[in-house]
Amino acid sequence: MPDTTFGTKGWTPERLGDLQGKTYLITGANAGAGFQAARTLLKKNAKVVMLNRSVKKSEMAVADLKKEFGDDTDVSFVRMDLDSLSSVREAAIEVLKSTPRINALICNAAIAQVPTLKLTEDGFESQLGTNHYGHFLLCGLLFERIETSKGRIVVVASLGYNMGLKTIRFSDMNWTEGYGPNAAYSQSKLAQMMFAYELQDRLAAADRTDVKVYVCHPGSSATSLITTSGSRTMRAIWWLMTKTPMVQTAEQGAYPEVMCATEGAIIEQRALYGPTGRMEAVGPVGKGTLNAHAYDKDVMQKLWNVSEEATGFIWMI
Image (cartoon, rainbow, N blue to C red; front, side, top):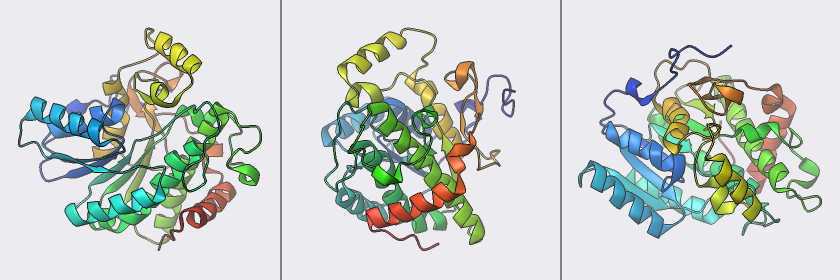
């Protein structure tokens, strides 16, 4: 049954009140859903800090936002490359120096369908390294600031978690054999979800409930994700799809992450929020279907341990 928590039209930014005094960090916010999330939050007087790889694109995004909302709009960026653990550490240091409160960290950035096997500078398969390990480390480094702010961590996942093996291939997480763009992407997004759900469990067990952790997905939205990292064939297929009703706008794709970052009525954390219409790819935003393989406890715990070892970061919870 469709989620009717927010009515037949689902969650929309009309539910937002004044966000003056609140600060939101968004990874990958110079384009697509991340940029639209920033726009929506700034429109309500929030402070937004973007964590982006490209300085040039970030400067352009900031200029566009200030042109739209005024020169006094509180938007800035910190350069961060998620596929570099050293870059993530440097960015976290800068954020902690300049940002006294974090009401929500939105883990929005991702790469997808990388056509051939590539490794990050730290030796991880590029999609796993960027989408999962980079965010795992960033969340850990900023966690105390988020907790002090009684803030949230929002993991932007993907329905791609239902593809591929539907588990983590611990025997060969880098896909040195049998690499497939979709399978590797699916594993990386499943890993992100498992991190979030395991973090929920650990916070509950430690009675540290000031931080809320939510998982959402944008559905099928016209963002730059495929066009920036996918193969030529995937880019062509995606371009054709964007001309159909099966794909919604990037602004609509941003609704789930903004909802998870701000909505007071959200209660359930062990859930997946996103479009609830056709195939849960488009339509009104609410609580969707969460399949059990995303929170397989044994796999989540093992992935957590592997992730701590891979990133060299031990969570103190």
